[in-house]
Length: 201
Image (tube, rainbow, N blue to C red; front, side, top):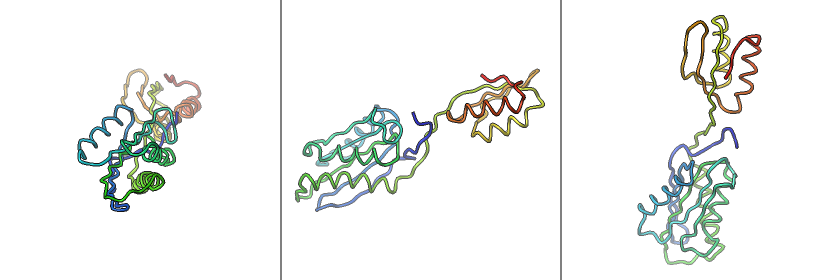
């Protein structure tokens, strides 16, 4: 699994009109399938009078297909959920759910028009989506002598670590968390800097 990747920073909404139909696209963070389904239910409750509330989600790193979902919500099969999911999978964003709410305006779009409308709505919403970053953190404890405190503090900062706790006794013990991908280089650097004297758990 990817150690870190872009995710939605918050919910984000865009509106547009296509052939007299109104489309409201809402994107949201969703780091579990339960969170994605809860978001869909919330959008249905917010837009109960809509003609359709079509949806798709990708839980996990960008482009991963292990935990995905989609629904055409009454539109012709394959014309809404699938193009929405395709847009999400190619967005470079993970842990993301999308609901496109449609208010029918009296002009039929045809299957090709629907595919372009639903996929395009999600693509355009993604272009202006505020992004954050999901980081997989791992816990680590380092015990060192007092002489090595400064160098180890510098290594924690250099490897994007966070100090969660400090214990000063005969030795100094730091409870840390580090991005998963930085753990091995950090441990190697600490052992090198302390000439193998550090205890890392």
